Image 1 (cartoon, rainbow, N blue to C red):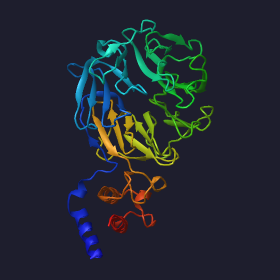
Image 2 (cartoon, rainbow, N blue to C red; image 1 turned 120 degrees about the vertical axis):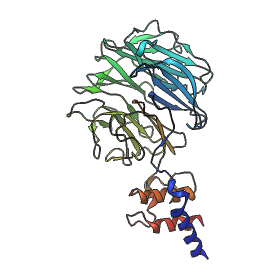
Image 3 (cartoon, one colour; image 1 turned 180 degrees about the horizontal axis):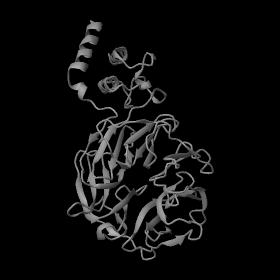
Image 4 (cartoon, rainbow, N blue to C red; image 1 turned 90 degrees about the vertical axis):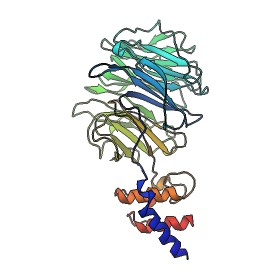
Length: 413
């Protein structure tokens, strides 16, 4: 009887609905036509997602940027704000209804920083009178001190340059810092050490520098520099703070697309084995398994590494053949990855598959705490897509096949 049950399950897998499962393949969640620049997931309720888009000139008209909100993990969207150009969204670390948005001046929209304290029902501009903002100068990036949330940092940029600012009263007033030491013209990404917030990293464009401050942004030193491009994304490994990743966008052939430091930014090396193209705008670290990375290319979609960036492989099933990934986010459970395109190709969602080293329970590919029918689904898709995922290889024969499915069924039964 036990063997008969195995056969029944096996035929169910290959004859019915399970063939439609999508594992590390992508599901389109809408928002096509939007120049999406930022996704954030509510840290207190990961069913809630905010998305910001940038204004752009279409073929016959202007497509103005917006702020969207979903209460069901992206299944449907409400439009909170229209007629703006959102660069980044940021959630307050202890007040879930408080969201900041940096704004640019594309298509005549007003640059600055706006804030909501009611989950997006209403928005107000922060005072940015001390900032140099005009028709071509944007607020590109914002960060908040996790231990002193009244302290905000913001970076601006435009054709004629930009500056780094700090506020110690929640954005009511701003002071200019690092004017003589930050010798580049566009502030692109601010990243604060999650444990020691006096350490701040700043990515810039033009000369493609990465700067570091060890005293809350007062003084700066160059820790990386290259001949051309933009340091668009910086990520710090929260489990090993000495490990830092950064992406390089729109580079020459001599410039790396993804770099890594193992010593708090003092030295950097390239990590691009298995990658096509040298221009990357996004990188994100899995919140619980820091050896798992995802990187967004400006042309060739999404890449994944399961060994801290030593090697990479593409995860582009169901994505357009050519797509620019501008932003990404992982839910608080670490099971869903969201990405979005800056070319109007929409927002996508995928499950995250863990490798054997990260499996808490053998056969639990989606890391939901149990081995169930969803893990069979994932294993089938590994077979259909010729994916070798160690977590699914229960008999350790370096193959994913029907024997592994039977072993998973045995665990379930």
